[in-house]
Each structure stands twice: as C-alpha cells, then as structure tokens.
Image (tube, rainbow, N blue to C red; front, side, top):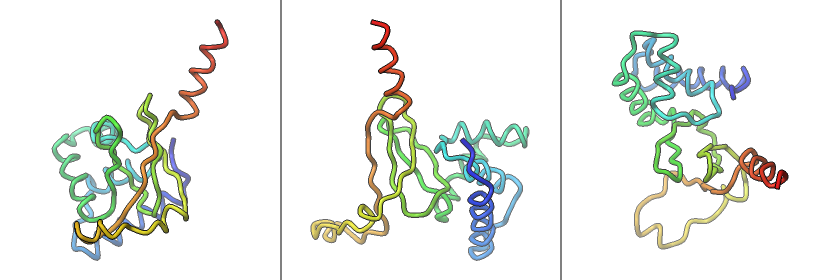
Length: 156
C-alpha cells in the first residue's frame, strides 16, 4: 500500500535536508532506496527494497542497497522494525508511533497512541543507560488473517 503524495513529499524533503545537514551526498541510488521505503507503508525487508529499486535501476547491487539501508538507519532517516520471526523490516516513518505485528502473516502496521508515548520509563531502565526512544510492539492476528480464519469456519 503506497502512502499519499503529501507524506511522501514530506519524507523526501526531510531526506534531502538531513543529507545536506550531515554532509551526505544525495546520490541517485541513495535517493531511490529511500524513495522505495518512503512510498510504502508495508515495512519492507532489504530484499523487497532491492527488488523495487532494481525495477528503476537495473544495475544496482544488493550490497549497495544493504549499505544504503545501514547508512539511512545510522542517520535516523529510517528505523528498523523487527517482526516476531526476527526478520528486519524498514520504516521511513520516523514520527513517534508503534507497531502491530501479525503473528500469522508477519504484516507490520503503524498505529499511534499518545498514551503509550507518555508512558514513564521505570527507574531500573536508567541504571541500564539513557533512553533515546521507545516504541511498543503489539502482536496479534491482523484483520485480514482473522477474516480468512472466520471464512474457513463458515463452510463447516
């Protein structure tokens, strides 16, 4: 599912501004890897990003995509969204939000909650280090999988 034009344009503008501010070259490959992520709400893995970018840049290598994803994450332009299977997905939405992960199909969906954003960190966390960010990952069965399961039960 693609994002609407406004969030995509906002994400691309943030990409360009962050690259300029941090002295990163705005290369064609880097731009297209970021665009692939910024245009999606699907939280794709690196291979999916590679396949998508490869349609536009047939000569791009997997190594370039993987290195670019690592750079984009290090610069705070994308975040990793890990699923219950341990596979790493990427998210260009850097606004405070949380994830719902389907335990059947692995789909990762964003959701927003001011209440979760305001949760205080326990004192025991301070002993571990300084918290820079926090997000909640909720696991369950998505509406699509739940519908499939309900549909199977109707025929019996």
